[in-house]
Length: 120
Image (cartoon, rainbow, N blue to C red; front, side, top):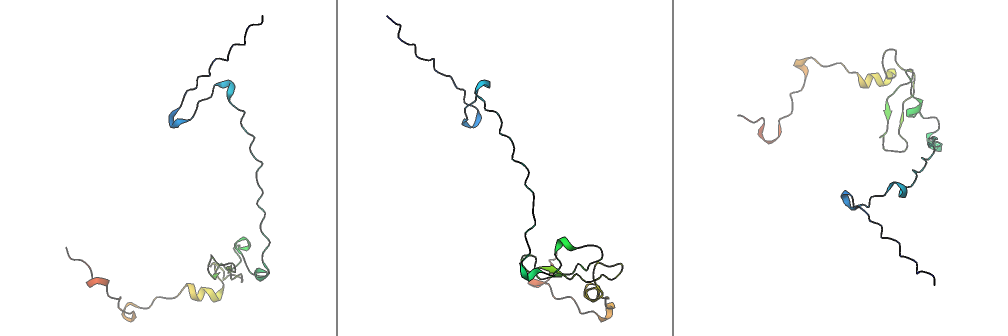
């Protein structure tokens, strides 16, 4: 008569820190191959952005004055020819760089909230 098949011996597993089961070297799977790098392709600009200067269009010869809020879809830059030696065109240099008034002609500072500075 044929001998009855012997049951397989139980596999002893070691539990590592965090409760994961450790694997024996023969049980480990080969690492997965990494995905190929993704190419970033710029999105096509919307019709309302045609002719407006975006961040990718900026150079040393273009006015960098921001127009609009950076979170809005129609945010862009001025794009005019710069005033030599400045990052802005002549018109925006007038806004960005204003002469300071002499001290006697300045308005006094607004009062501090809650009664002024704290005395120690």
